[in-house]
Image 1 (cartoon, protein in one colour):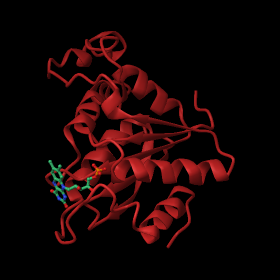
Image 2 (tube, protein in one colour):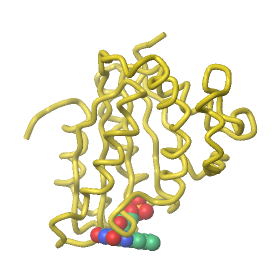
Image 3 (tube, rainbow, N blue to C red):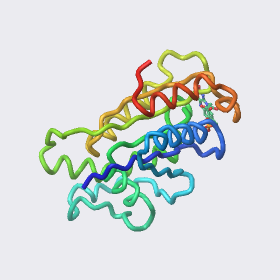
Image 4 (cartoon, helix red, strand yellow):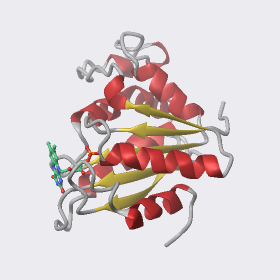
Length: 193
Ligand SMILES: Cc1cc2nc3c(=O)[nH]c(=O)nc-3n(C[C@H](O)[C@H](O)[C@H](O)COP(=O)(O)O)c2cc1C
């Protein structure tokens, strides 16, 4: 069952850095529109990595054997129940940080549910990601993350739109960059620029 809530996931291991600042901007922008929103930070959660056992291919309801041993099932269920989900993540080595990738890999059990149903066409809801990279250069800086997110989110029932920001590196960089913060707020409420 979907409710009207939006969920914002902060995906950086660094507390109070740029992705956390972006989470604040997204939350405030949505609240200003009177939309219910909750935020979580993945680093505060227990997220065990997928061990590749493939049990979710054949288990009842494609349940992961790690479900209930950490916070992942609750996060995935919560995401699916929301109308709109947001991610705010730094780029680490041309991809997302390990804590975020661990959550993504655990999405395999959701993929198996979708596959077992014959890969039905889904009525996709919106997922929005803000990706933040320290470097200004690098044509393909965001490519890997965006591809991964697209295929992680599809079986969960979401289509991805993205805002990719470059040259934001030091912990206070986004705090000092009012233009980028405005871009994030506009992106959160669906204003095109
Ligand atoms: C382990 C590590 C790997 C990184 N790899 C990249 C990279 O490949 N490209 C890039 O532009 N920035 C890279 N950065 C810089 C971060 O993307 C940048 O500092 C970002 O602002 C961090 O966001 P945060 O404050 O939310 O953690 C890396 C930083 C770390 C700590």
